Image 1 (tube, helix red, strand yellow):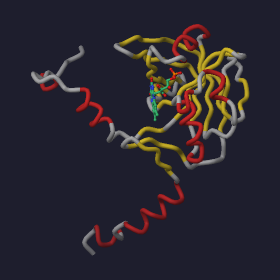
Image 2 (cartoon, rainbow, N blue to C red; image 1 turned 60 degrees about the vertical axis):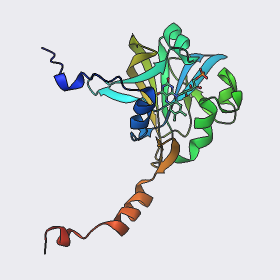
Image 3 (cartoon, rainbow, N blue to C red; image 1 turned 180 degrees about the horizontal axis):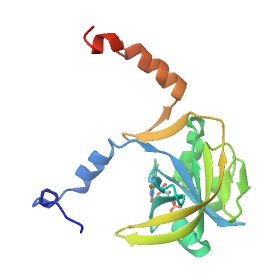
Length: 193
Ligand SMILES: Cc1cc2nc3c(=O)[nH]c(=O)nc-3n(C[C@H](O)[C@H](O)[C@H](O)COP(=O)(O)O)c2cc1C
């Protein structure tokens, strides 16, 4: 049985500014969702990609129903998830609509291959995943798109692009580990030795 805790019922409506403010604390990995095939393609920058299940391999992404990608995802029943590397910030900006670029124009300047489903996948992405649409749950302004993973292209690179507090940040295993080592308290002093 699903129980809704009473604490969640609030008398005071939460303002969108408050909600946005809270969500700014949530660090999100940046991906490009691609949709369509041939010249009828578009894509968008997202942080809402989440792994859903491993067996079967599924993921979900929350897509605004007004975004140009949404009707193409629905029409073709497929989409690509391209997890961006730290040095692909310019691609993130293009696909967020910077410079007014639309549709196929956003793909210029970077290299793409066509997945089995027909969607473009980004060469050099940390991982590029070809998904078949399993279900779309339309809720409020967005569609929760559930994708069954078909094929995956992995790269050997590791430094990722994230979004936090309204800005892009690089997450680099080596650099961050080095920085952590500088500020870490030695394990001995944590044990009180
Ligand atoms: C860092 C970042 C993350 C975003 N995440 C999402 C997201 O998860 N879902 C969404 O619908 N839009 C998201 N957006 C907004 C879309 O990228 C943007 O509205 C895009 O231009 C929509 O595509 P369109 O111009 O083709 O309609 C995000 C934008 C940025 C900059």
